[in-house]
Amino acid sequence: MTAEWIRFFLIAAVLIAALIAFTGAVLGAWRFGFVMNRLHAAGIGDTLGVLLVIIAAVISAGLSLESLKLVLIAAFLWFTSPVSTHFVGQVEFFTNPEIGRFLRALPPRGGKDGATGAAPAETDGGKDGATGAVLAEADDTKDMRPVEAPDMEDAKPDSEDHDVKPGNEGKGEK
Amino acid sequence: MDIKEAYQILYSGALIALIVLIGAMLVRAIKGPRITDRIMSINMIGTMVICAILILSQLLKETFLIDVALIYAMVSLVTVLMLAAMYIPADPKIPDLGGKRGAGGAARTQRGKKKRRSRA
Amino acid sequence: MNETFRRFLDGEIDPLEGIMNVAEEEDSGRKELTAAMKRRHRTVIGTSKAQKLMRAEKESYYRVYNVVAVISCILLIGVLLFTVAHLPRYGAENPRATEVMDRYIERGVEETGAVNVVAGMILDYRAFDTLGESHVLFTALVCVMILLIMDKKNMRTGYEDYYTTTRERFHDLTTEAILRNVAIVLIPCIFVYGLYVLLNGQNGPGGGFSGGAVMGSGLIIASAAFGFDRMDRFFTARVSAWITFSSLAFYSFAKGYVFFTGANGIPNGVPKGTPGNILSGGLILPLDIAVGLVVACTMFGFYSLFRRGTIGGAS
Image (cartoon, rainbow over all chains, first blue to last red; front, top):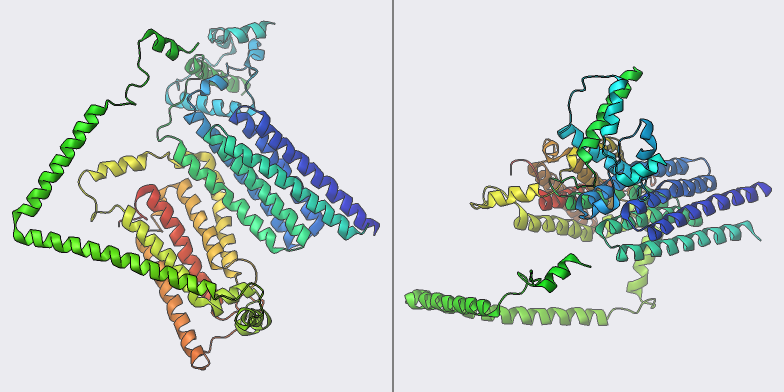
């Protein structure tokens, strides 16, 4: 009897954690003002929330063919939800005419002004991925030039040449 | 309290909470200013419906509901995929994100290659 | 301050330009159009007596057709309302409403060999109904083909460019490496699971329609990820037509045979099998497979027709 009650409280704890994760996702979808941020929040529900619900169901069902199917559900959702997120982000990136207001191409990373590479206030993880992909694409088409001097010394003047946003520069120096 | 009652209360409460969250996301889907907000909301509603089906399967002790949830998990990709194919233009132009993106990108790749080589 | 608004105040731009047209132009256009139509009308009627007669016949035909259509619709509505009015009330003690249900639940497993009573009902007792549903799907696909298919027969000059540009208006998802790599893992699982749902119809939830839908969405994901060219290697319009035709023909003949023997009290010789096994339920399993194939072909056919105008291959 005690074992049953322990199992019950275990399930209750995991389920409540799952509900908290989903609540976080919904709150994020409501409080953030831009789709990429909302996607970032929705990812919590798609991964952590589903995982916790499935752990609760596995504890409740015990080890059987059912629990195998439950694990499969988690595996499939973890496979498909990043793809959905990627495509939603792409739709936003290619169709929003005002995307430049929300996203900014990151200045190059590394060097002594590495702090400058940190995202400005409005960017977050999801946007990083989008801009990174675009930068890579642009490189492939236009700017793929053979690098002649693989020395670190050449890198220093190169890094000063980059145009960094004036605001960011100020931040970096501080 | 009997353990069966406790389970019932737990699962019913979880289902009610999920329904409230689904309703909130539905309102987001209706209000969403852009199409992507709506797609994202519908996608999240799908995820939460899968979870609701799983909780329901434990509440009713019916194993066939897990099969239903598995189908949902597999097929939920199709919606987003087709909507993305519809809305992304055929030759997508990379939007201007402010700053001289091209130069920065080139510099970034060059630097990356240099770093990699110097490490090697 | 809004730049556009300021320019509007300065009188530089007219915001309604191109949106609101001057009314005169439209009026004169309409006048021209009506005049042209009248001229054409006169020429058509005035050319010869035969044409005049033909036109009169056509007009009277359409008048009669309208009247007959309205009358038959009213009659149909009346018959349906009459039938509905004479249905037994919900939960009423009516032999027609309750006995059949009890019989299905009590002796369904024994008579059909299927553990899933619903599968036994839709594919054994009421199989004729399901045959109609499959044919409805097939008819829907045929109608969409009539409207949308682009082949050499109905390709008029000038339409070719239009349709190629339409096809290219969509984003090509085959360039997405992420989707391709996920699809490689996902698609076999979807097909295996669809087959499981399809073959397990008589023992659990599922059956022809749901299994076919799962397999159809697997086909859709495959064509989105790998492109139509690679789908055309194994799934062309010919293959789709043969699968659909043979499934529906098999269904019709099998159920016709069973209905004929059943109505005349002849044993039909179809083994029922042990309820609970995969090979059980008599004809339910092959019929499930037939329905599932039709549903999968229909789903992919819809997608392909709406996306590019053909089902696939050289049509």
